[in-house]
Image (cartoon, rainbow, N blue to C red; front, side, top):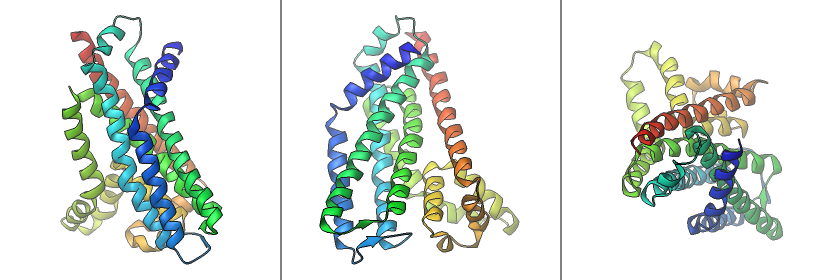
Length: 273
């Protein structure tokens, strides 16, 4: 436990020196403030054009930022030779990766909170903004995306030998899960027998953390009707009393699964050091 805290603190210090984090925060705050200022209503509540646009903005920017920071942090340890030194200490791979995950998660959540906070304060001063419920739902969406994709980044960093290889995998994973997912999903479901569509849709949705978080947020914002009849059971489940806890449980399983997979791969490399 002590080792994990030390690694997390080290990652926290390095993360706040990373100019990428502040560049993302500034860009995110500017885009969010622009949406708040151009929308005609004083306050945006529920699922609307403004909340949908903000949701898509977060969906495009945040996973890419998280994947890059997480993967580069791990590959940097390999390229800079830091891992060769750290591997001589009595430290387990799980403690090392859990500490890296905790430190990076703290950085990402702080940056996201600052971006939301700056935009919210500026919007309030200008007399426009999201309703408290919509604001917190969008913020929780950003938090869930950061934590889920950071776990994926751990696996990418463990697999990659250097930053260039990590960058290639990061862009490929981001493109597949964010850009290409919808057309691939439609094509795959269209080729299936009708009775297979709903079970396949459920399984495929759970395989994509971005799609899972997006559906949860859209339904919570009151936009479930736009999803179509295939998602009727999803809407009922998310709106039910167990919806939030179920989503949290699935997210925890996702994170633990990817971090443990990264540990197994990193441990194999550690034996070669």
